[in-house]
Length: 167
Image (tube, rainbow, N blue to C red; front, side, top):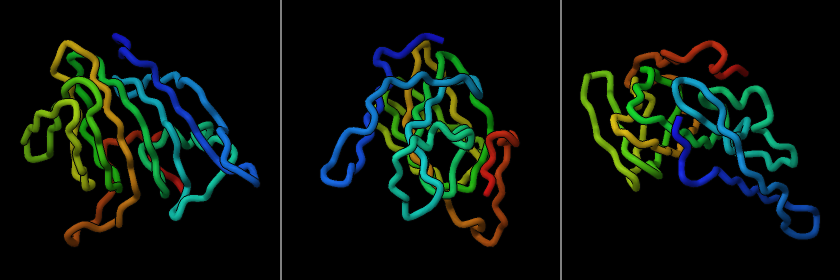
């Protein structure tokens, strides 16, 4: 996959007991999966979030599609790529940082998106495609949602077992 222009840098701060301090300043190496490269920036296991010293993205559960707390992930979609249809029990905020994307919904509708656009995805079946000849970078912030929508039981769909949320 063509690399993006900017490497992915994550700076994490916390308290050291007397004043704020930088806990970590590192460049992340996104991992392959679902025909894209993704890096989990940070995740929490519950809400309200627990302030922690250890990096929760080192936890094997950081590969999950979403969390019972919050999750922020950056995904690089390669040129001319087609994603997989899926739905998670989450409220997702997607911010297109670089390039262009296409969001395909279950009813067949397609929405073209470009850098600077923000999407609020409310647990609908969807698919992310990059129809261009350049890599696109998207930031996803995922929050757990209620398990029922309009009286219909909502469940994960299109999410491989290894990436599903477990308690």
